[in-house]
Amino acid sequence: GAGAGIPTTEWLCERVLAALGRMGVEVPGGTGLTALTPVTGEPLCTLLAADAAEVDAAVAAAHEAFPGWRATPPPRRGELVRRLGDLLRAHKEDVADLVTAEAGKIRSEALGEVQEMIDVCDFAVGLSRQLYGRTIASERPGHRLAESWHPLGVVGVVSAFNFPCAVWSWNTAVALVCGDPVVWKPSEVTPLTSVACHGLLRRAARDVGAPPEVHQLLLGGRGVGAALVDDPRVALLSATGSTRMGREVGPRVAARLGRSLLELGGNNAAIVAPSADLDLAVRAIVFAAAGTAGQRCTSLRRLLVHRDVADEVAERLTAAYRGLPVGDPFAEGTLVGPLIRMSALERMRDGLGRARAEGGAVLAGGGRVLADRAPEAAYAQPALVRMPGQTAVVREETFAPLLYVLEYDGLEQAIALHNDVPQGLSSAIFTRDQREAEVFLSAEGSDCGIANVNIGTSGAEIGGAFGGEKDTGGGRESGSDAWRAYMRRATNTVNYGSELALAQNVSFL
Ligand code: UN1
Image (tube, rainbow, N blue to C red):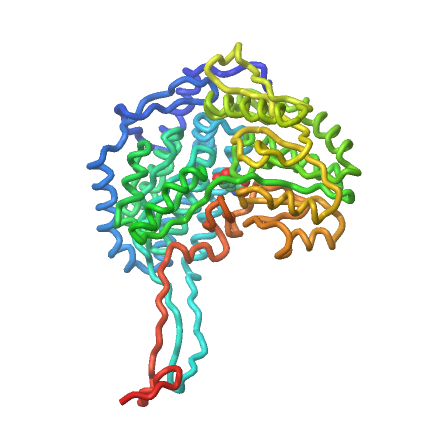
């Protein structure tokens, strides 16, 4: 049962190898990169990291594949993505095994991550027949004004450990139907998951007769990422990670006038109004804050509760937090798996220490657990801290299950507090008052890229555009018209008359 035991690293190794075997994926053996499992904190295997020559070769191969892929009709390109979706359906459990072993996600969330990939594949296949441009009213007689969307070029994808494959798939499924080859640099913390995804995509390419070079995988650390950032053949760099990373990447890509799509940190809040359905709100809050061990960029980190219900909400949350089963993410019944590394646990401790120093009272959790059974792993009981106000530590993102609870008196004050942080990814309000809900969603309300009512901050569907404002980086990925970032727009004016009419009534010759 949950918390009762932690599997051995040998057992995890066997499970991972079995999953890779069923997918027909080979691991590039060698050195340079160690696949470590947060479940025990111990190494699973070592892999070959790419050197500078390999980075160059991969970008060159993708770049050479571009003209052919660009000329392939979009619905044909969609066939590759449809096949990838089929393979993900067939190997859903196998990919989920890797996600659990490498990212420490509980079973249901790991399966959910693969489902998110399947969903975005379906979305992209539909999109492959809907890369619509507009027809625009021309001011001149006998003229047609329109816009066309064309493939952009090589897309570099830099992804993070916490969504080791779903975020890759948002970018890759959409980029491929848009006609762009992809070069992927996954987090060095989750290499096996990326090897599996790359293997499945290459298999899909073989199955449908698409050129395999349209997808390249580069395992490695900072150097590999930096090479993609600086390579002028990379037309768009889509990077997910910390705000610190984004501050480095954005200006460097801009310096070569490349495009970047940034999906950076969040410090997501939810407002709990006095009219809220508290049964629903408490369940939503616990999932958003403690789910994925607080390691989503959409995780709930700040709770702003109206004074009239603050004590009740704090009590209910404390009770829910005390019962949260922390432990082996493979075990049925576990709700909170390990933190990714010991350093994350240290940052959580540091955050808690600062919160106490800034007047916070820990209502539940915060301690390390299972240290006796897994001395190298970082298991923590999710923490709930009541704060006297929005102090310095509350305004920072700590990538751990650490929820700060604050009080407010009026909605205007709550929205001001809500927006008074550097980040702007996801947000929510729990209320049954329609006026309050609409104010929160209006231009004067939440300043985030995602604003929800009566649902938590995490767990967005792929159909919407995903991303946020301010320190979150401004990028939008996944659904809606996020595909436009992966294409270039051409405005076309066609004169089908026999007169030369100049715009703005200019007369000449
Ligand atoms: C992330 O944490 O980087 O909305 C992405 C969510 C998921 C994606 C999170 N669909 O929580």
